[in-house]
Image 1: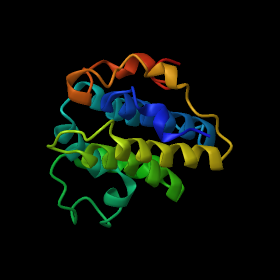
Image 2 (image 1 turned 90 degrees about the vertical axis):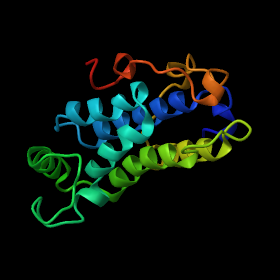
Image 3 (image 1 turned 30 degrees about the vertical axis):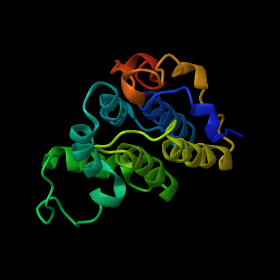
Length: 175
């Protein structure tokens, strides 16, 4: 079982990368017949963009928000196109609430210290990561190795960590 203190030396960007690895491992295990590459690319954009800009678009493809409306025409989406709406609606058809919860964890991580400094070593962010780990553990899915994101140090950029190309550690985009 992963502990929150395991993330103490890992930057926020590294923690985001770890959560993405959790999502990737989850979907590859639970829904191996679907092509997750488009979603994966969307998630990994977070490691090389400003999170608030990334999240405004990403939020619209989280099932809880995507399925809030019966059609694209009824929605008030500002960032995704009708083709993207249709694509993700089809991809998510029949998926579990746990999948929605995992994607919400990415949004929650973006929100936890939005526009402020990180207190201590960012324990609230670590707790979000642990919640994602619990979803995998409850499904008997092995957790990603923390070493994959350990290069992104909490000592960089006041805890946020340097931007990096997360696709190079992706479990889906590097198949």
